[in-house]
Length: 147
Image (cartoon, rainbow, N blue to C red):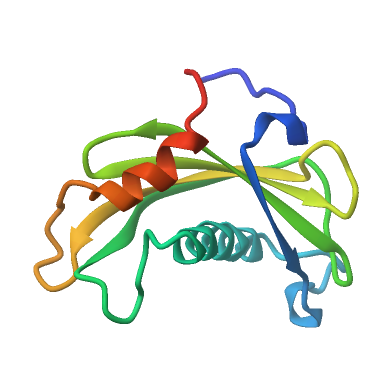
């Protein structure tokens, strides 16, 4: 088993996206339910890709599919918190990318949760992996952090 490290700070991430929480994000325990964290990861990364021209969800010939995810929780978040998602790329292959995402509550400097997911770039119709195009690579490379 690997040793559990503490949360990262904002300085460990390359880009940020702000996402408001919703009333329905809270569970019976009065905090954000764990499944919401994964939705925030997806929203942050896909919003970044769309805004930067690397993903066209309606007409693009290629799309990204999630093949693996994980999350570690360090602190609670709840509505009406504002979440800032920090994004970095830990590994960039020819058709797959491992994102690491930190979720920061309000103005906190350390992450309340950190997770990852792996996207595979696939042909929209065959669902088979394809190499990243020039635009996707140009958008993802600046997010790459040293191993």
